[in-house]
Length: 168
Image 1 (tube, rainbow, N blue to C red):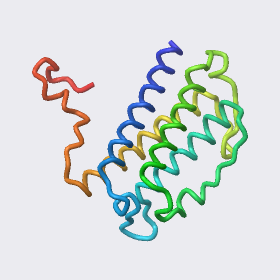
Image 2 (image 1 turned 135 degrees about the vertical axis):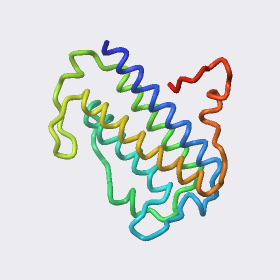
Image 3 (image 1 turned 180 degrees about the vertical axis):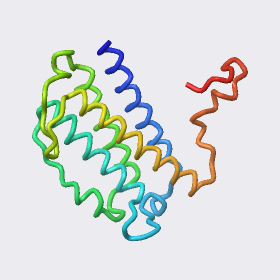
Image 4 (image 1 turned 90 degrees about the vertical axis):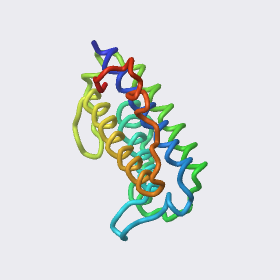
């Protein structure tokens, strides 16, 4: 059963990361760093934030790597990272995160770890990261649709008559 959880979790992270890259490819630099108001986050900030979250919760909290996160800097950035660099960072961070998650044993999933002051199981940490990643990936997709008015094509398969009426 734990393998199903790990496979689903890593699959979702890879899926959301690919969607974020699709979005970054469709946006201009100005759109990536646009904010409606000072208290709002730009797409670029969300990508940096996801990289920081994966590093802190999984690479450090679950995998034991040193935690070098500067959370405030993720939100303070104002256009100083290109789309290409954002794509590289998120791709590499997800790749490392997926490797740590995929290697977890059932025994390790119930081990405790402390992340951001929270005492959680490693299973909890994985679940937190996947749901957090999903939330912000959805914000990036929504922003991209607002900026471009494009159908991003993530659900084209639903138009296939062989698919039926079910949504996965």
